[in-house]
Length: 175
Figure 1: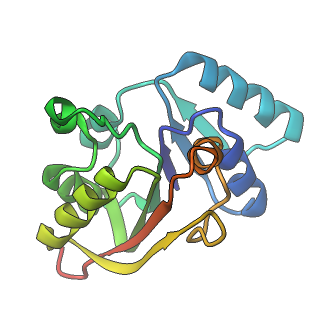
Figure 2: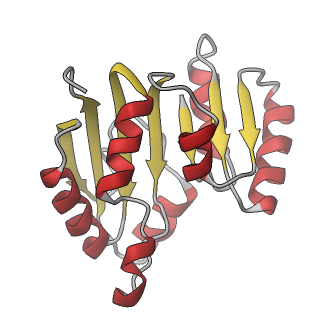
């Protein structure tokens, strides 16, 4: 299980505690978040998590074998709200193809955002992709996340009156 951009790591640690039989890898570039997660791992005595401070695209492209992941989580990625920055958004057609390559057969990719404009963008990218199929999509007010704990960024978005969008994608058997 891989989580990209785990923030302070609380939801990553919670998931690892709920599933001690699984191995978790978290990638985060924000050093204070990594430090907070390490403290939380130690406090909770969790032994099935490894962390990396590195660019997620580079890790996926060069450090993980194809078909190595049962699941990839991307919760509340930077929405890059300014139109001129939309090209920096992580969810792009090429990214979905890379994710599909790294997922095991029937592997799953979970996404969540609280930005309406990014949700529209994600829907468009998913619609154009043929490597992953949509299993579930929910729009809610924080009460119905798809197989994940509530995150700090989700609580922040809800506090601002934002809706939440969740997607569950599964690797197509033909990829």
